[in-house]
Length: 212
Figure 1 (cartoon, rainbow, N blue to C red):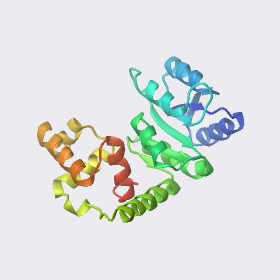
Figure 2 (figure 1 turned 30 degrees about the vertical axis):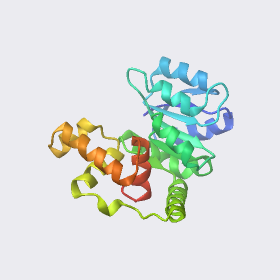
Figure 3 (figure 1 turned 90 degrees about the vertical axis):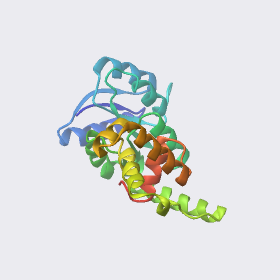
Figure 4 (figure 1 turned 135 degrees about the vertical axis):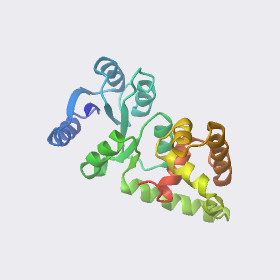
């Protein structure tokens, strides 16, 4: 993987570079702020961006969104101090495929790189635990129950493939059904589970252990 690192702390970039290069990846550029990260992404066209969420001039989420407009969008891993769901949803909506807590980067970075290289999402285990706890707490507070058991077998299949990052067209091809059929299943499962975006589909699948 050709990787671009963006973090405003040089010591953090140095540590990340060491981990990546020991694993055989190539760090093609480093950025100390968000605007520099966008410029270097346009110049070097890396396969993967590893972005601190809080950077000067432009935050990591906005960098992710801008670089997804490139002709060949890179994979994106977000590094954050926050395990808050609102940050995670924004990161996923901006095109990130992995969300890591900076406190656990050493353990999670290389598994995240492998997952993103395979087109799969990845979350720090600590993030997953927080998401599950928050979800259960909200359900109890509202007196609600999880509607997962209401899904049909086909809706379950569609849910998993969408959560893994497949487009509607790719899901249709894999399941050998029409695109309109997939769109109907997607709409039905989102209604049953009270989900409103692809980012929420991914988070729900993480909470349920459908993807890890």
